[in-house]
Image 1: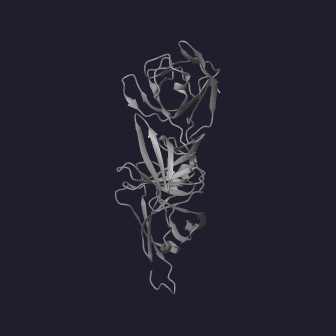
Image 2: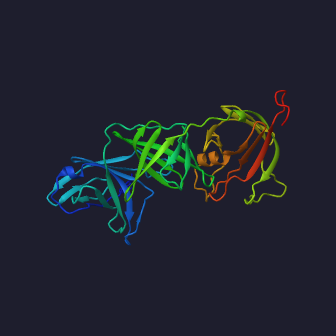
Image 3: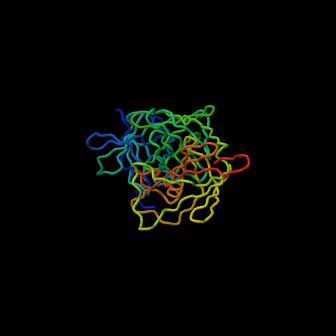
Length: 361
């Protein structure tokens, strides 16, 4: 690892006003909250850093690796106390000087020539160990009325968000960071967010984001049940482009592949597309209206303008949205595009196979 690569901290000042404070005043666990630039404008960083100080020992680590979340790498060192403050000397850093001035916030200057400073906030250690692994569970985000989101956490480290108001779909990576009794969830999509998992009560997970102040949210578990009347065989009888969405330009005479047949069971969906039969596992997500295929594979590389990983892209492009459902008719939306400004572009209408128990389509 190159010098100053992980967290190149050059100067740390604790807000307040005394250099004669005891060592115990900086003991604790600190999380980066926000940044202040030379114009005194604050903003939230896309990278979360952590500092832990216990007596003469100090540790640094971060979630700097995109699409992975918590990197797991730590740098540990010792603190040398002197009458002017504190210093550490580590082969991966320059000297770090501390001046004890307060207990609540740490101001960090990452480079000598930088005018942007990062503010760290102290986090208290919970009384009991916090443990949460939301494998294949669905949760509703509570805490921001204008941002109604349902999230499906998959056991392959990906999650699918459905924004109820706009109908937008977002796919990202999630990971759990643990430190002693503390736990954090890292959500890594278009932006990375590190949320402290504060407590779990009944079917609700209380989390918080620390910026200029603390913001509290809740992930409320949402039990999704696959509708019984979606199970069975379906045959395509009509297809149309969704009004207001311009279809992509395609070569003359080329028609995009379409699903002409589906056999839906609780665990898998068998489809026929371009005379090729596929059988894939599926799970229900979103607001009970997304058919997600968590194990799909894509063999093409992502494009230069695509910020999604290959796994994210394959999940997102394969999601189907249930538009309406009755005993005899199923309408789904398909072809969710890669770019954020696009979405479901086609409406596929299916009818059931006629049986003796169902004499009409």
